[in-house]
Amino acid sequence: MDLESNAFTAGKVKKNVKDTLISWNCRGFRNKLHQIKDFINEFHPVCIAFQETYLKPGDEAKIKRHSLVRRDCNSGRASGGVALLVSHDHPSSIIPLHTNLQAVAVRIAVPRLVTVCSLYLPPNATIDRHDLDRLVTELPTPFIIIGDFNGNNPIWGSKNVNSRGRQIEEFLSDHSLCLLNNGEHTHFHLGSRSFHCLDLTVCSASLAPFFTFRVGNELCESDHFPIFLTRVNVPRVIPQRPERYIFDNAYWASFATRAKITWDMVQYPDLNVVIDNVTASILRAADETIPKSSIKFPKLRKPWWNRQCTETRKNQQIAWNKFRRHPTVANLIAFQRAKSIARRTRRQAQRESWIKLISNINSSISVTDMWNLVKKACGIYPDYPLSYLRKDGQEIHDSKEMADVLAEAFASVCEAQNYAEPFLSYKNRAERIPLRFRTKKNLAYNADLTIGELRRALSTTKQTSPGPDGITYSMISHLSDDSLANVLYMFNGIWREHVFPAKWKYATVIPVPKPGKDPQNPLNYRPIALTSCMCKLLEKIVNARLTHILEKNGSISPFQSGFRKGRCTVDNLILLEGAIRTAFLRR
Image (cartoon, rainbow, N blue to C red):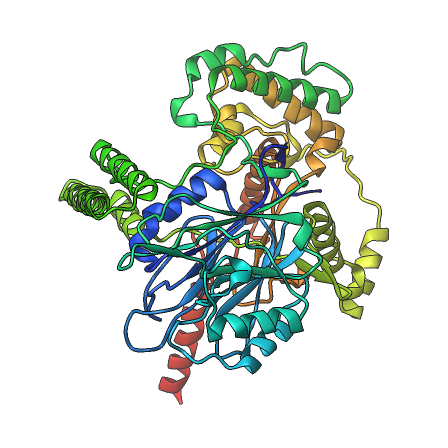
């Protein structure tokens, strides 16, 4: 059994790419989505800590392949608020905090488990020292606290010191925490045209040697610079998607010519060799005639972005760099003008893109396309965050170890000890009875499979994910008539010899978390098994034949509605309701 999930996909180690954490006082999450997507596309951060998100409890905020853990300010207006945007490429779990501070925390594997906390201390609020002490006690070690502390102290590069700065200094000293700041300015005050150090990064002493601190060069539409924490001496494993065939662009005529299942391939006495030959021939032809998707995850799109947006943003960067070198009033006015033009250009591009999207919804659009547009506009898409697991009190965050733990959990559910004693006794007795596959009677259901049955089974298939062999129903259905005839000969060999191929006994199992259950418990996952499409095609043929015989001979109870064509369990409910009504009338 191969265990796979969206996060267990094999990755490629890149020595020049490091795990990165970003902290940014964005001053509004929703109106900075374009900049956040740029961060993700360029740096692939493990998580991004935000302060002053300005989100209200009812506001929707989602980004693909990421989970947003947030705490909104309940002041009645859009102000304050903190959040952590966590990538689904790393196992993580939310840490519940019981504090009056604006803080959220998540435990993430980078690659060891580290607790990351985003904290915002408003400048005019009175911060109780006990709240800071309690926050530290609630964070599992080792931890990193990053955020906007709004305190001045020469220790982290400020020109003066205030009461908040002294309070933070005592807090760091009492808890033996390390400060990662290197003295770079993190905040720009527009009114005084001055730079300050307000955003801090503190961590447990054990983490200090493994992270480097860097401040970005651009404000990114805020008055705070983004902060980048990079883990050193640990090459990052870049997650990769499994390659998938793009069937819409397939050259099926060429595929049918190249995928030749010859008579010689299916003549081997060993059926496992036959299966290997047929599989290799089909996959070789598919690789030559069907393009594949990229192994890289797609970048987060900004469909409204155009050339004017790029030009105005470039002009804004030029104006900012000029003001940074020469902070004069004239350069400040030029920067503000360039910033306003860039913002106006983006808003106009967004408005035009939205009008173009809505104009596609008309009387000629199909229902499927219409709902796809609605879901795209509303940001509705499947979301599967990856949590680390717990087993016997131990935290499991390595991908291979997590796969082993899940496999053990799935196997334990199917163990005999879970069965009731009467059923287990019946099962043991039934398994001791030898099965006789040979018979002298010429029964219809024992006859060789026919090409008509094969084609009917193929006509009922749908596009599904392939099993471990990589063969899909589309490939089989586009084989030539001669190749299909030889595939049928292979099926009949299995049917007559009563030998099940070893390769068909394997499945790719995808664990899907059960909604509303603790994702750290391995038993709270539902296994989805992907078996060979060749195997399922043979099963369809046999199932159709046996179902026909059973229905024809009346061997199935008339009261059974499940797993029968044209019947469903609602039929039984209607019969029950009818019987109850009849009984009342005859009473």
